Length: 313
Length: 249
Image (cartoon, rainbow over all chains, first blue to last red; front, side, top):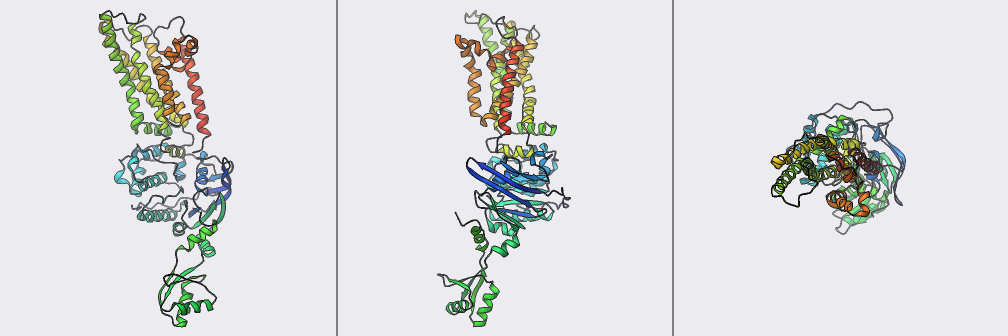
């Protein structure tokens, strides 16, 4: 899939009220509170990752933003107004939701055709977005025969159809293969580069750390963090370094002498916490220990996220 | 109900096999049953079959095919709505237009009116042709009014079915209630002494007065039948609208 569409000029600034504001948003289903007095703003022109474990309330929040679920309390304002009050809403907000799927009996083209007509979007846009998400060749096929990944792409095409300045995407990476996931990351970056605002949910921290400028983390319907990705990394990610030495014992003693936390692994490598690769390298050099491997462990952000939401469940 | 929404809803109807097939069946059934009915009655008349109804008139027989075509109209009304609910398409629809209920009903009526008009004209004409020398003119007294009534009746049955499907959000329940009702339920109820009086006010029995060429003295008048059917349709549509508005997706 190639998202090599024509570059669009950046969107003019919208209402000063902010692109997307969530205020004290609350929703309960019977006795379970799905979303609990949630308040945050989505920064304009950037990709905001909406993170939380499964069941945290992300989808419910997004459906309230889009007027599909009535909040018990609070408000979600899109361009300063409730979604239901927007005129030709698809030209203001593009959305991808699991609970908003194309009819399996309709072709991809016909699905986009009626959506375009409903919001007075020109027919020419249909071919553009189909090419944009790599579905041009299957435009005449029924959506029911699509794979999960193709259905996701058709959903993305629907979201992009109205050329909206704001996109709300619920788990868009679901069902995508690694190549599709990479294309999605590029698409999101490109959309932000065009000045659009993107709110994208995920339950995978690593995925978001690569894409998002800003992170909003929730669990059990409550806000846990609302900060830039760089801040999140600086604050939460404990640096962890894997090091493999010719003489692990000597390196171990040297690190302990420096007051650094070290764990010896079964394969003979050491995992060092709290310092970066440069520090470990320097210590090894000072002691004349030869290193076979010195690397940062990628899982650290994921673990920071899990610690934040109270560990794996 | 903006023209754009109406247009989109019409596109939805014409790009799905189910509703489109049901729509096409309305004139096909009216003509098919009309022809078979005409042949069969002609044969009965010419062989002096004693089982021919004593109250038979060629004018009224023309509408038998239309009566059966209402089955397709009911299926159409139900499918137009339930196409939204099977796969979660209603989510996309609500994103495009948070208030699409009226546009959907409007599109269903716009789609069914030509189908119902064709079904009525061709169905009655086919019956008269099949009756041969026993056929009556479509311009006989009462027939043009009954033809207009048939088109209105089919459109109202589509609306009523769409309202019922909005309440149920599936095709099974409204079809399981409406099809047996119009096929035999209200006929059975109307011949049982205890329920006969009440059965006159069932939507299809009351609505059938619209298709009656020469109403009997004890029957509801066509206007009264229309009023009763309108009350039924309005009540079910309002209930559907209320459910639609207050539902989370």
